[in-house]
Amino acid sequence: MLDGVNKFGVPMVGGHLHPDTSYDALDVAVVGTVKRGAVIYSSSAKPGDKVLAAIDIDGRIYPSYNLAWDNTTKRTPAEIKKQLNTMVQIGEKKLATAGKDISNPGALGTLGMLLESSGAGATVEVDKIPRPDEEKVPITLAHWLKTYPGTGFVLTVESEEKGEECIRIFESAGITAAIVGEVDASKQLRITNGVETSTIFDLNKEIITGITGKG
Image (cartoon, rainbow, N blue to C red):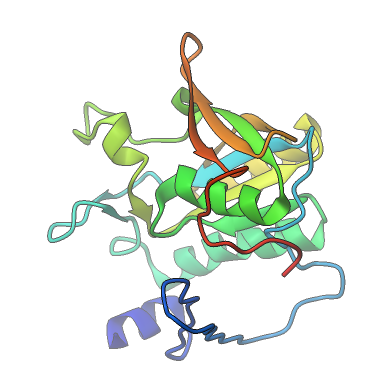
């Protein structure tokens, strides 16, 4: 824990939603300030927005847990600060309509949470999601999509132009990013490889967290 505090340059903080308890529980920790209008919500994606995925793919599968992607061990505190600051820049420039950091559910599960909160759906081209070179890191696409990267985000943006500006910001910090899909009103998250399409979440009848609306 001390190594993490030193690496990320923050005091020890924590906060998690507990959707599986028999009671409502929400633990929240906030450190710092945000400029007015620069907050990126997870509940404000809208049909027609582009979906963007951004991940630091320069790393390794964590030795003791193969669903964790470790890109932070080799990074200096300055590099990590620069990577995390990308979202500050994107928020202050008002480039994103919605966003979340990729966590335990992986890139698609995190996007599903964002869509649920926004009351929307999307189709994602899975081959466009940034991933390591398979010759250098032997990891299948199915495995990769379930990993929890040390640094990764899913965003929605109003246009290709705003998406490209986000990509430039991410790439300047060593994060690979790409536009991977589009938001729609279906309340379904679908994935496609250009030949076949499959629905992985149908939010009309399924629940991920049960959280909807701005927050």
